[in-house]
Image 1 (cartoon, one colour):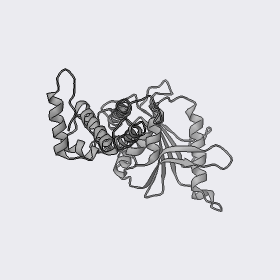
Image 2: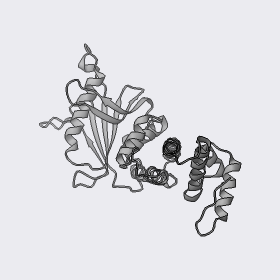
Image 3: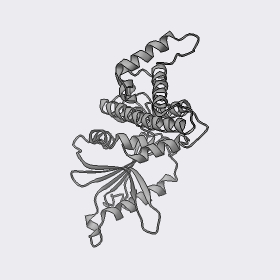
Image 4: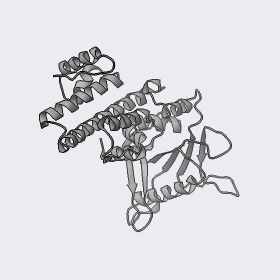
Length: 304
C-alpha cells in the first residue's frame, strides 16, 4: 500500500498520530471507524480501488457505454507538475490500448467552480503528454470524467457529455477533448445508476458489481491491517517510554492482549484473522476469548 493513503486518511478524519492525549483504544477506534465508513466517493479510497485494472475497466466501460475498453496503464494520485505555476493532482489517470487518456475525479462538493478546474486539468494533461519537439497533432484523445456528489446544473440528468462545437454550424470541433460529468445522486436501475449506488456504499456486500465488492473489501482489510500494525508499534513504544510496562516483553504482551480483546469485542473477525493481524497464535486468541466471555460485570481478567 502506498504511504500517501495513510496520510490522507489521517488528515481527512482529523486524526493526529502525535496526539499525546489519545489512548491506543481511542485512536484505534477512531481510525477503524473512519476506514469502515469510507466509500468510493472518498477520492483517496477510490484511487486505491481503481488502481486495479478490472475495476477501472468496469467503471470506464459503464460510463462510456463500451465493452471493448482495455486499460494498459493506470496511475493514481498523480501530480501533474507545471514549473513555476500551478500543479494539479489527479485521482486516477489511465491510458487504453489505443492511446486514449482518461482522468477520473471524484468531487463531493461539486459546483460550477469546477468548470475552470477541468480546464486546468486539460491543459496540464496536454503538456504532460506532449514532449518537447512533438507536433500538437500527436496529442492523445482525452476524457476528463468528473463523478459529482451533487448536480451543478438544474437539469437533474444522470450524465452530461461536453464537447466543443462550432457555434455557427453546430458541428463538433474535433479537438478530441471530451468532458463527462456524472451525477452520483441518481442511483436508478440503469448500469450507471447501479454504479453510482456502489460508489456510495459503505458496506461492500451491498454493491451491485462483484468486481467493486471484492476489491473494496480487500483494500479496507489491508488498510485495517496496516493501521493496526502501526498503532501497535506506536502504543507499545509509548508505554515503554513512560515506564508503564515492567519490561519490553511484558509491555508487548499486554498491548497484544488489549488489541485482541478489542477486536473480539468490536469486530466479527475470525480467530484466524485476529491471529494474523496481531501476529500471535490462534490458540492464544481463543484463550483470551474464553477469559473475555467469563468476565463479570464488564471486568475483564488478564490473560497469564
